[in-house]
Image 1 (cartoon, rainbow, N blue to C red):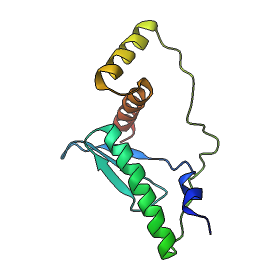
Image 2 (cartoon, rainbow, N blue to C red):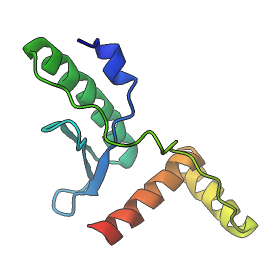
Image 3 (cartoon, helix red, strand yellow):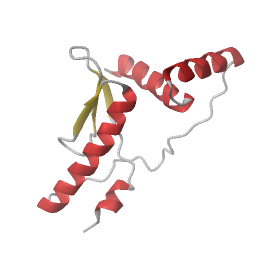
Image 4 (cartoon, one colour):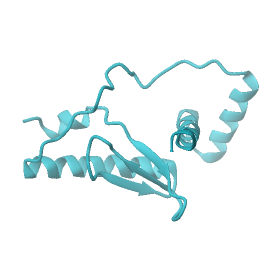
Length: 120
């Protein structure tokens, strides 16, 4: 049986959904049934989701519940290069600074938000 650290080192995908009724964001892990969390901001939702994932994994190990490993994500690194106009780069940098988050986090938020609109 794997240890908690083994599972925490795996890259479990998150599904982020904007909560239109309550506000904020809800995050689930499709490979970890019932593991769900939320937060008022995308950053808080991600932090809470990572905490919830750890607690969920600890409980599953204690109870002897089978833990799924992430599905078919090995071929995806979670990184890609994107060339953008300098004016867009400037705008993204300024907006992320105004929000007090890294440009990487800000772009992840924007991509997630847009992806939800097109998928959901």
